Length: 213
Image 1: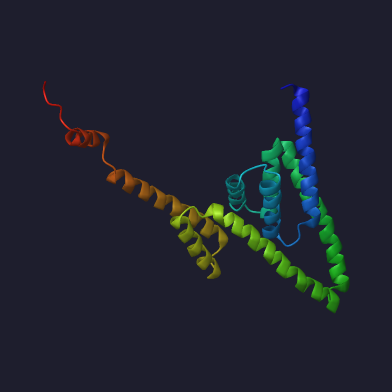
Image 2 (image 1 turned 135 degrees about the vertical axis):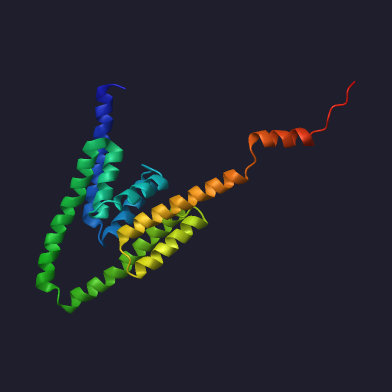
């Protein structure tokens, strides 16, 4: 492919990223969980830029580093889509609209936040945000839970989180526990599997012997 063709393709990808994350920067209300739900809907379901598992892996990576998860995920998605320039475009287009909206909302809340109308508006937003988050979690749950082991790990982590255990120890401990359990299971399966030499002996013993002519 010529350099001009590649630059054209890169320009199209950057423009797509700019449009998508500018839109999300303006409409992605509700906090990081709701933001991630909207990103999944746009990137995985609508545009098919990546699969569910890759998106889930990127989301997991953002939870291993400090900072706002949804902003980090936007930057990750831009990097995957269009390299370091995509990283800059996605991050900037996602952050700037939200920054200006926060400033406007902070001013409006300081001035009108105590009025009954605004209180009712805020109460109405919360159920909608929760519905968006639940829908995203259900879609991710089907990909993240790959069997009984990961299901148990998730349930235990949820219980410990509700009991007050911090997020970072849960992430590290859960990942380590699943890794160790998978290693023990693999070794147990390998020990129970007959060796190739033994399998050959059993096959030779069970096969009908040829009679001499």
